[in-house]
Amino acid sequence: MDFAAAGRLEGPTRALRHHLDTDASGGDLYSYYKANLAKGDWVEQATSGNGHGGTIAFSRSSTPTWGGTIYLADHKIHVIMGQDCPCGVPS
Image (cartoon, rainbow, N blue to C red; front, side, top):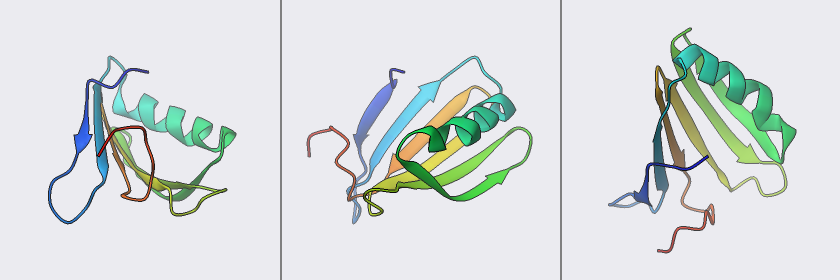
């Protein structure tokens, strides 16, 4: 999956922000990420869905300080990774 834009947030946090436009509905995206997130090293911390998308907070089971939040809506995916996650974007 290629992200349309990536960059560091300004201000007191060094979190990473990724945004992707997609043809999928928010409900389909939410179901997909809920079902597939735990297949790797990721663990859900909290979820909230409304049928048109939702949010999923997650972290790594091997390194709990690495994680973030996925915001899902119709045709949109927005991911904010926490400041401790080494996500490959130079600082």
